[in-house]
Image (cartoon, rainbow, N blue to C red; front, top):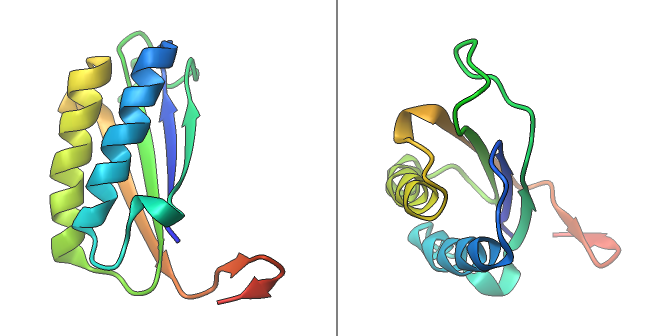
Length: 114
């Protein structure tokens, strides 16, 4: 039950959003037991964002939320891949993005909790 919450300061095209969705769908498999078949993604663009006091450079905040326990090694691999994806697709420099991970066993779906 992964959820990727993506907020970027740049405007995205439908083609870029499709590529992000596809590449994030592949990348989520870097976390053991996760796959695109349960992945939910929020792609919010044109967000007014400031980082280090600067608001006129492309910036991203990506939250990766997973059901289960933390896996620092897998999260490190995911960070490298997500950074690459956002840099290649949207031109956001690696030093202008944060990626946050949250792992929890408290998830609900279809009227019940897992």
